[in-house]
Amino acid sequence: MTQHDITLDETQLRIDLAAAIRLSCRADWHEGVANHFSVAVSADGKKFLMNPRWVHWSRVRASDLILCDADDPETMNRPDAPDPSAWSIHGAIHRNLPQARVALHIHPPYCTALAGLKDPRILPIDQVTARFYNRLAYDLSFGGIANDAAEGERIAATIGNHGAVMMQNHGVTTFAATVAEAWDALYHLERAARTMVLAYQTGQPLAVMPDDLAEETAAEWHTVKEAEFAHFAEMKRILDREAPDYKD
Image (tube, rainbow, N blue to C red):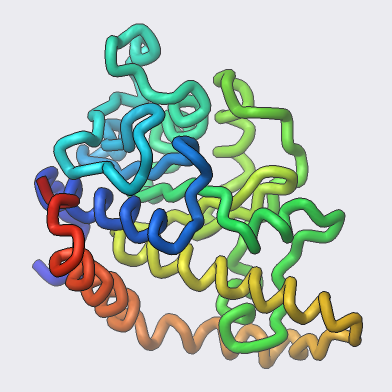
């Protein structure tokens, strides 16, 4: 089995998701005790791990992650019930999108700033922004805090087969087969959003790439997939040295 294969090793999935949560906290992408990450642990994708309700991301450990079943209507009646919006969004994603093994939903500063614009698009103005050319879904129908099933189902339907979604008036979510790929996508999506915000701040016209060049640049990212795994592995090594309790 290569690192590209889907693994159902729950212990390793717990460690990886806890690492993604800790690293996102260190990057200041989290929001209080809100936002939520999940990873599927069953072959059909419906059983998944998620961060516990209202625990600060700097403290989340692998053993803290709660196991949920997207088809279990009694989930919110459990003593360890997840945050209502987390259940609404991630339950719908893992129920309807089996290819989205990992779903990282968060409100990072620059992505959220773009999400608050009338035109929240990430345009191909450098190689990082071009990574998302025609590969980013846009949800332009925010229905309020996602505390009900209908909003979660609507969000899932908007995503389709895209690897990430910009959620207007809300935030972003990235999807992948592995935590490493989803976290690397989130990292680059926030950097792309930062580039857009900084470019807008100059007040000068954007130098948007022609469609063919943007597509060529986006496709080139897929030729260096190993870098995504190396990036996450390197970041976990930093955690291993500085905050090893994430594995507990």
